Amino acid sequence: MRRLLALSFVFLCAAPLPGCREAKRDPRTVVFLIESSPTSLDPRVGTDAQSERIDELLFDGLVQFDAQFHFTPALAQSWDEPDPRTIIFHLRHGVRFADGRLLTSRDVAWTLNSMRDGTVISAKAASYASIDSVETPDAYTVILHLKQPDNFLLTNLSTRAMGIVPAGSGRDFWRHPIGTGPFRFVSQQIDQDVVIERNPLSWSAVPKIERVRFAVVPDTITMALELEKGSADVEDNALPMDSLPVLASRPNLEVTDVPGTEIQYLAFNLRDPILKDVRVRQAISCAIDRDLIIRTLMDGHAQPAKSILPATHWAWNGGGPDFNYDPARANRILDQAGYRRGAGGVRFHLTMKTSTVEDARLLSAVLQQQLARVGIALDIRSYEFATFYADVLRGAFQIYSLRWIGGNEQPDLFTYAFASTRFPPRGANRGHYSNPRLDALLDDAWQSADQERRKADYAQAQQILARDLPALNLWYRDTVVVHNRRLTHVEPTASGSFSFLETAELAQ
Image (cartoon, rainbow, N blue to C red):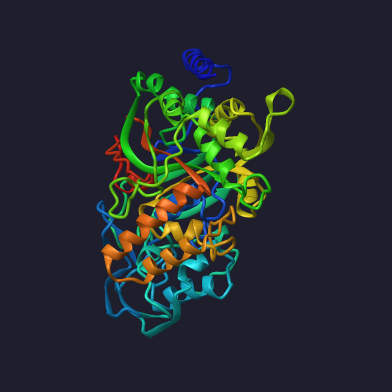
């Protein structure tokens, strides 16, 4: 399958297709190819990759991260923590929303309270459950009074996690979002495009790029052709790795590759009568040849993952139980669990839901082949992304695969994804995994001020997750950006964000 796709790609790029002439377009507009439409450009609501990456260009949080994951000022120019249950933010003066309104503490309070009181329905709301009240003594001071210490509240107030919206923004805010970021919203056509432009009122550095059109192109061969013929300028981690050598040979294109933190995972619904058996999940892990997939589908542009956290993170621990590729062991586990082979050697059927994005379909096909060798018949159901993701959010799946993007750079993701208090819509524990010991460890780490104690808590948590396998950590994907050479100063990030658009330039 891999060779066939590669050959097809080479042929299509080498032979011009009828009707493939480059359409006239504004040369000042950067055309950025994405696989699917963002589900919501309300930064309080959107949790899919496209929503969060575009929102990061339109909105600002109170704080942001530097390259070493340390907090730095954003809309808050400084903050104080007089005690473990109080945070005082001092806002920048003179910051304006893209429509000219002045940003004040009232906007910050509205943003937080609208998630907490249900004005908007959001899976992010539980991330602010530690807040007891929001006080605004003046236009530029916000005081958060907490119910209990929360080591991750600053993370959840950062630009990558949320954005401040104007006071009064309701549930339809996604239709015309207004932020304080370096770009401002222009338009959106579902399943077609999102257009943003330089925000002249940005308090931070104003981008050199005038306008960006995010064009939705689900088909990867079409996406590659658009780049090859010059009718598109850039894509970020959207193309199959097989296509990269061909595109790198084109004189008008450049391929930039950096080690990434974006992690591919496989998730299970533990309410399912088969998948709730931990032995089945362990056997599936033993049946998957990650190294082979990385060498073939990923063309080596990935590293195996033993935890959600990046291996360089202070809380990373990969010392848990090992269920690496071993099909003989997978067969033994299933035999001992009583799942004997039946007609045609099949033990049971499972269904994997996936999007129609090419990478996702290829991965599901490979997993289908590998699981078949241990007697598991994997049925694949493909849907356009919005339908697929909606099913994931409401728990209508047995197995699915997605990527954690950016959020896995902080250990509060363990709580968001695996705590028994974070079943949707209060979080991303979509498989309904529950382990009281894990909950206790995560609660302790959430409140403890001792980093060594927190590190020990997270080490134990990662060992529990490595044994129980509510989800399989597959690999960290490199960030690979393919761009037209007319777009310069492109510096990809490890998280795969689109923030390089803030400093990139168009050659004259």
